Length: 360
Image 1 (spheres, rainbow, N blue to C red):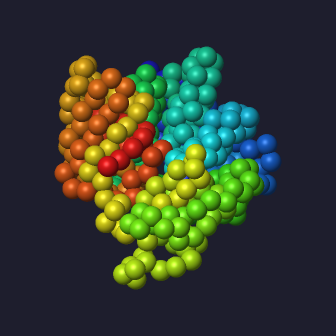
Image 2: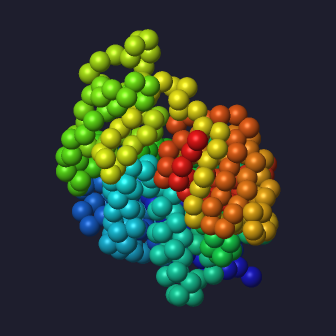
């Protein structure tokens, strides 16, 4: 007997095929599009969108083709509070957030799932490229499209009520299936960048909300002030371009952002090798894998860690102590920014995740 499931339909090809597969599998499917902006025209459109008026129309057309009921839920206020405001405050604190991780955590699998369960649905189905079996999250078979990283913040209870029908398919296969099903979104380009920054100018978006605050850019090797900025929030660890440095380094090599200190409003820069870190401390761990590390100072069984969405994977040893996860990398990583998510894997299985707080 099929389940009663709610299909989150973004207006893209992935969520449309996921909803179609759920319906074909015999589930009682209802489609829902999340209206995330009080002013949809301010969000990205066309190939660069994910939550615009255009997308809601595409989602409705897909639901009509599949033959399922369709609704639009207004999540604008919740999205602004939990994702947009969080994005701004994290940058203001000198950290580098990932809004897609936060959206999955707070909107798609908290607000939406809570409402779905309250309405009597058994699960939420999405078009994420990841595999889920017996409540255990694994990478997609399509490495290039794998989204297990942005889903690794979900709890075991949330995963228990989730369905990811696309995890065993490549994106090419999903598009071909969409065309066979007569879904007009079959060739719709994927969304990119941050949906709530219409022109892609993150620095301008933050400046508008945080104002300007001039401060020094300091060379870590010499201690000299080598430039000035109008807001430390405009920088991120590992950044090389657009630093606003007045004088070249002594050896002529490029400088990179090494750290951002919001209290003193100081941006520290230095050579690329100074970015290398081998030890990472993380906070707010979520253990959603087959096992939970034993307290205190339990070892988290993991072979690799991923530190950015679609970023490089590093061999590691992980240890948890209280509410802190310590990750020792087998080889140094660069550009590790506080505020990003560290996801632990055992092979292709997600063990858990945590938010990076510091790195050495």
